[in-house]
Image 1 (spheres, one colour):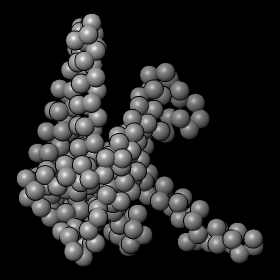
Image 2 (spheres, rainbow, N blue to C red):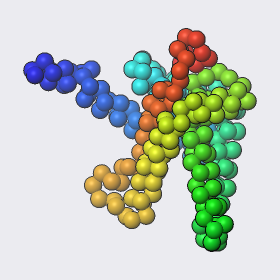
Image 3 (spheres, helix red, strand yellow):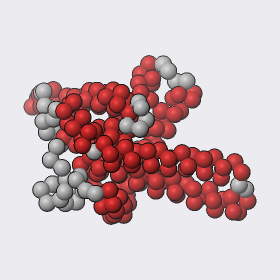
Image 4 (cartoon, rainbow, N blue to C red):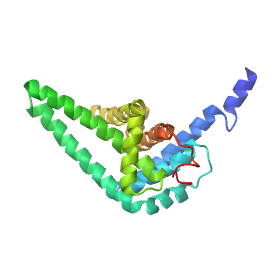
Length: 221
């Protein structure tokens, strides 16, 4: 028992290791918000965030600004284009959901509601997968798009888990903002939502990668 407690509170023990990672999530979230503010840079900022998270969850040494901005600059063209495309898809889906759930009724309305919900789930899983693999792999856009789809098809349960995390994190943040739960630490949750979301997704999509790091096209960050 004494050895277990000692290990828990050592510098590299499980509890302090987790707390250190949460501290890094806070800092990475700040950097992400600062660099994604122009909107057009949201894709490169997301790629930079996942590049740092990859090393963080693997407990490798990393340069906080160096790894982030190296990926930000290196993947800027592809990431900016995919980021704006993802925002466009999200905007179209929001409009579709609003229209279907407010204007369509009867049997056809039920079918359309089911269809648009399934479409939202698929789009969420796909967008979630796209940016970690963009940050971690050296691939042309076409191979990246195809690879993300194939990876999700091979791991449907993890794909659904990815969507569930998105719903909990961003849905919870939206509820806090809407209902005004600003007491205590609740105010921090919406602020940290992007960094926390990326952190959780990094664990999921790393688990989806079946090939060993030395045999695939995963980047050595």
